[in-house]
Amino acid sequence: MKGLGAEVAKNLILAGVKGLTMLDHQQVSQEDTRAQFLIPVGSLGRNRAEASLERAQNLNPMVDVKADPESVENKPEEFFTQFDAVCLTCCSRDVMVKIDQICHKNSIKFFTGDVFGYHGYMFANLGEHEFVEEKTKVTKVSPGVEDGPDTKKAKLDSSETTMVKKRVVFCQLKEALAVDWSSEKAKAALKRTTPDYFLLQVLLKFRTDKGRDPLPQSYAEDSKLLLQIRSDVLDSLGVSMDLLPDDFISYCFSEMAPVCAVVGGVLGQEVVKARFLGSTCLAALPAEVLGGGSAVPALAPSPLPGTAAGQGPVSDGEACAAPWIPIAGQVWNPCPAPLCWKHNVLCPHLAPLSPALRAQHPRLPALKWLEVC
Image (cartoon, rainbow, N blue to C red):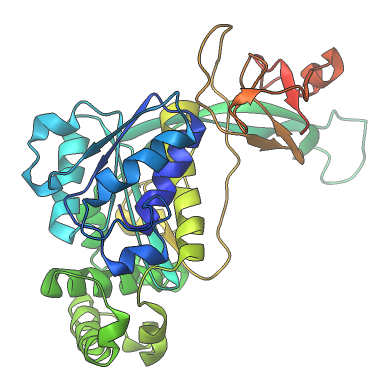
């Protein structure tokens, strides 16, 4: 429950999930005051999860928020089976691989992510994940309507769309971190693979060796170790040292609040989409590298990719756990009741959706209210 964990917890609580458990056995340190906004002033020495509980619960009283001060490494397999999704931050490589295998075995959606200075990443293993994607309809031009050699070719009609159901099989974290870069497929995809994938390998190895992340107060010592680990890791992977220039060490110290906000926003969004909306997830690592349709999304200072969220069925009287959804430049509230989840109150600015707008957006049959505030 450091800065990134606080961002993810905040986003999920505001989205309106039924319940959320914050698990952390570490105590609050001076380092946590930089990005962990859920911990109040004067909490040094307290358990991080318990110190975050009050502010987290105040974000949304309708969500059952709990704090668990035990170590994730001591939790049995049965502990994780009570959850629909598990999201890890600041864990060692061995712990992440172990819990990912538990979640995969029990069909639990697994997410993990971290922030190192200006860099961050997230990984998702949704097992066999089905989602719905909006596609532009393909139409054929009738003979006689147009002349020329392209008459019989199919054309895209941007005015009509259709919903297509798709299925993706995700790989496990162990497989994603153990890619054989000497294979022909991997070599062909290397140019399209973000360097942050290899930076992640270096930083996870540092965490395993030192039991912590690089610290600003030990910059000189940690910088030398990072350069040595980079040489060892890239050499073992069989890739060029040019993928990570020496200046990478200047951008991977400490958690930065703005980076936590970006990565935490994307990670929280992917959890909500996968659990409630049945949408596809981000993909950054070429799928052919992993031998399937799964991917390891990597987030860095470069612009982040984004995908539009879909909408699952919501009937009258159900509690809506979906976030605000951007469609055609507007913000739509998917909840069938006139409740503004943005402010957690009955919102006077909610207006009924007209039949014309309803016909314009057939993909949202349960939508009844337009949020305009």
